[in-house]
Structure formats: structure tokens, C-alpha cells
Length: 389
Image: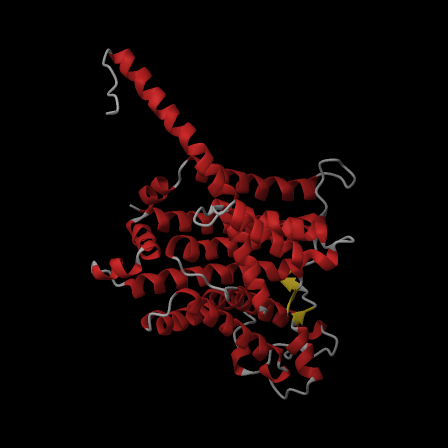
């Protein structure tokens, strides 16, 4: 039944997206590792890491589009789940440093030695094992989303009020993680990573493998989202988005549906954050900044809310533009440009890039289907039915 559900959920555009991501996840690492430096087709290692970061952002955008585009939940604090997944992976990477740190302590990370911590806090136990860290990458953001969502949705907090309290949640976490006594490195965060699963995180092969793994995670996240939105559950989510009160009056437990999709979305964001950290090399409290969550919403709006493919495309396009424009004379004005982009997209392309293209292509698709039907009818000797005038 599961293979049938996945097959039914993947249309031609979805299959094309999966194939493109799979091709990138295979060809880019091979180009980086096998072709000689200086070759026209060789992808430099720094670009592999940069594009890997874009892929992680695309997973985060998918998680936001799942709840906003299909369920109408506008979260302005999804960066918190992304950062929590990143911190879970960062804690594992810090434990792998061991005695190779600046202070040579085999148990305590350098920042704890510097702050005179007498022993390792209890919530750091287990992070020396990868399987435990991988579990926490999903469990911690998911548990926070479940608790937060249960309280918010049970109280029927919706609309702008829900957006505000999600922003307050991530800001509260920002303040907490900034404190040195919180046990996560304070303002500096976690950095100076050495190994992941015994492999040097700075090595070309490791970076190529992380990029390929990020592409695989993007494909899995996309397929899961497609399976959700194409199922009966997805139709209920769309009904909640368009008419929540009416859906509740029909007997559906709206709170349960919203809680499930919100928790699933947070787990996806946590995985994106975990893949992001070893490729970037640092995780600090700035990832909790509300501006990051708002920027992620802009990615979805630019690409096309409620399209999934558009959300991933928007994340890549906007972040590429950010990389391009923040490296020159326009760097001080990037935030103004980002705000202007959001305003222009809202006014001129309210459905985003992919949504606008789909709306433009739909009449041509309908005409082609009608033409094929008429052609098939003529071959069978049957006249095609005409629409009533």
C-alpha cells in the first residue's frame, strides 16, 4: 500500500524534481572528487559546501510549505527547530573532539573548561554516540513542536496570533542559548569540529558525502510531503486551510491534524539543521534569530506557496542571490532588497514563481488534453461531446 501511495503522489513534475536533485547529488560530488583541479567541469570544494547549505535550506523551506501552504499555519519561528537540530548534531561533533581541543580535556568541550565547569552536564550524556545524536536531532524539535502545538491548537490560537507566539518562542530560545550558563557555548556557540563518524569534516570526500546525503534527505523530505498532501490527510489539511470552522463542524478533529503536520514539519526542520552544521562548521544562537525564520517564509513565498517544488526552488534562488549581492558593494542593502523582493512578489506574483507558471500553463494543458480527446474520438469514429453553449 505504501509503494502505491508514493507512486500515486508523484506526478510528472515531482518525478522531474526528484531526478534533478538525484543527478545533482551524484554528479557534483563525482565532479569534485574525480576531475583534476582547474578542469572546466570540476566543482571546487567550497562550492560543494555552499550548495550543500542551499540544499539544507531547501529542506527547511519544504517543512514550512507543508504547514503554511497546505494547512494555513504561518510559523515565524521555524528557525528554532532548525537550530535545535543543528545544536544536537553540534553536541555530537564537540564530543568527538576529545583531547584534541585547546585545553586537552578528554571529556569537557573547550568552552566548558574555559568557564570552569566541574563536570559534563547531564543533558550532554549520550552525545558521544552518533545514533543517540541522530535520535535527538528528530526527537528534540519534534517534542518541542508537539508541546507547543498542543497548547496553541487546543486553545484555538490561529492566524497572526499564532505567528506572533511562534516568533516569541524562538526569541526566548535565542535569549536562553546566549547565556554562558546554559551549557551550549553562549554567544560563540559550538565550533572547531574535527570528525564525524571518524572522518575529517574538512576533507573533500567528507564534504562531498555530506552534500550527497543532503540531496538524499531533500528527496526523502519531498516524497514524504508529497505523500502527505496527496492523501486523504492532505485533503483535510487543505480544507482546514480554506475553511477551518466548517471543517470542524463536519466532525474532523482539526487540532489533531494541525498538531500532526506541525510536529512532522519540525522534525524535518531539525534534520535540515543537523545536515547544515557539519557543512558550515559552526552553530550559534544567531540561528534562533526571528529574522531567519521570517526570511525562510520569504523563500516559500517567492518560490510558490503550496507547491513544494516552488518552496525548494525559492530557498535556492533567494540564498544564491544573497550570496551574490552580499559579497559586493550592495552588501549593506541586502535586507532592503530582500524586503523589496517580498513586496514585489506579493503584489506581482502572489502565487510565487512556480504557482504563477502553473496558472499560466494550465490553459495550454487543458487545450492539449481536449485536442488529444478529439483526436482519439475521430480515430474511433465517435464524435467528441461538445460543451453546452
